[in-house]
Image (tube, rainbow, N blue to C red):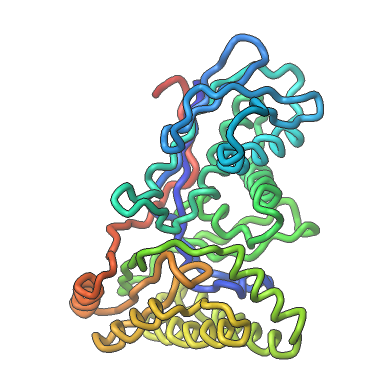
Length: 354
């Protein structure tokens, strides 16, 4: 039996700019996806995901490496299985096992979901699942890939499964763990290109706040892309500002310069707002505006984490007491501060144990 876990992510600085190749700052968080592979006799596979209400759902892999579940299944169920199917197919196509055995594949991403609120928080569950599944499959098929090759395989699989959108920053956090300065990996980049692992910025404290609803990254990114197509000059000016700020911010974080990093976060918030306003996308939604104002009143800094609109935002400060006051104010205003820690361990595999 093979068991692999991978953490989620939280983007600290660099949203959207990272799509254009700028460095972005991200950390892994202590929410983990778990994938377990148990060998079966024969060539049939089974899929279980308790959070989806699925247990031992059989499927086969065709000679052309396509996943095939029972075609009589409910269409809504097929939609839920789509991400897993595409990641699994891509891995099969690339790894090309000679004589694969069947496996019972157990998926668990409960860490990323609030049972009380019936929603995901926005910590990158699909990327964590992808990293764990790709790593488990490589081990199951006896492929001894180095970290750079396995990371690139996970990047490409997630890119394929997500319709070729996104920067891969969530995959990087799930794979390597800790704090990273990440630059997008493009097709022609060297095969050994990996993110830069850095230390925590001493003196900086931050707290994620859940806005109360999830957001569609795909819709927001599509809206920004339309701005680029319709008004390229306007897009370039805003993007250059975002890129300049995230270059500075990543350096200031790495150099342990808390004061300048907080200024960078504040500047990035306003640049994100302009990007949202110009593209008619609610990157800085009314919720994020309220949290920003609340943070300002308590002398701390705030920005969304991720594509914006909903999901989570982050309070930043160099003063733990001010941060605690802002956190309490957010809570009394109806928002949900989250107990999240940075996870230093990236993807991790266990053998022969539950």
